[in-house]
Amino acid sequence: MAFPLNDLPALKFSYSKRAVGADLIATPCEIGVQWSADGNSWTEYPEGRFLLIHRAGDQIDQQSVWQFDCPSYLWTLRKAVTFAHASIPPTNGQRVFSSSASGGFILHTLMTEAQARGALSSFTWTFTGSIDTASASWSPFMGMGIPLGTDLLSVLLRLVEYGLLDFRLSGARQLSAWKPNTGALRDLTTGASPVILRAGRDITAAPDVGTLQDLASAAYVVGDNDVRQEVVSVSPSLPWGRWEIGMRQPGITDTTAAHTAGTAALVTAIAERVQRTREITMYEVRWLPLRDYRPGDLILAPGNDGVLQPLRIRQVTLTRTMRGVVAGNLVLSDRFEDQDLRMTRLLAALAARP
Image (cartoon, rainbow, N blue to C red; front, side, top):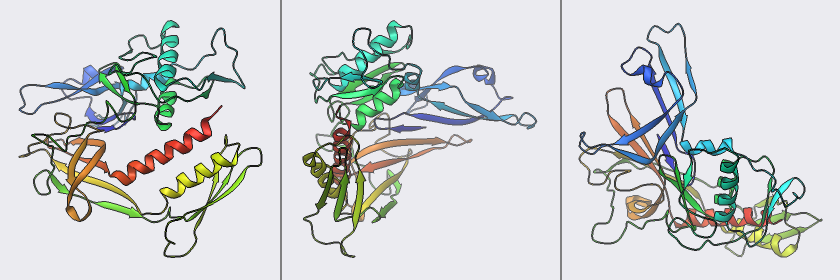
């Protein structure tokens, strides 16, 4: 099982058609994943509802073992698409929302219209066009055009990419959404009982993968209407001198926006990119995933040189073997990667202006 932040959870498993209970998954159905800390009391994780819609197997396999790939129930948003508004003509084949529209307003509007057509019949959500799940007024705002026929899952992920909202399933078929970096971000590094994952107790391995492939000290931005802009980093020169990147940015129509886009790209291109994975154990530990921490939380875990530092959970992945042994890993990010994400969102937003 993989539970990424602001993305689609997924479940993969193998099961024999000869095993007990195989009849329960012989036809399309929903699968709920539960956790237990003692083996007696079981709880379904809010994002743990999956759709059994893909299977593969060998019909002459004597053991009749089949593999199942199950997306989150959130995947049903792919089965509702963007229609033209009855009283607002589309522009260039797009449903256009004004610059005063928030991500919550756009998503709530499209889902409400889809439900009125009979789609998303079992889907619910905990926000409106004016307030998020925590009853906070929506912000920021951005005008955008959405091509007619675009499925609503793609719309949701685009709104996340533009930095307009965060989301997660808060029930089997219920979607919650918040202003960015509010409800989906819990700081568990302070207080009377901070979540601290220690090497040797909670974490069995801490592999980092770093790359310098994306380094650059100059950017050449190409927009629409013959906009061309060179941007040079003010940071110290790179080990191998000037490295350039080219950026084709459709939607950018003036040099000011082009300069902003180039500057944003260079801010994240002056340092090594590092992917941090932390292998976790579930035995003899104090803190357990799903129960005590989840994607989006800020926790204390080994960072550079194994020193504890605040790191944000980007994904929780869990596995269970044939013998019932449970293990998993966390994908973590630090403040530099958060900055990278903000810059990516800024670039996307600049290109999205109608």
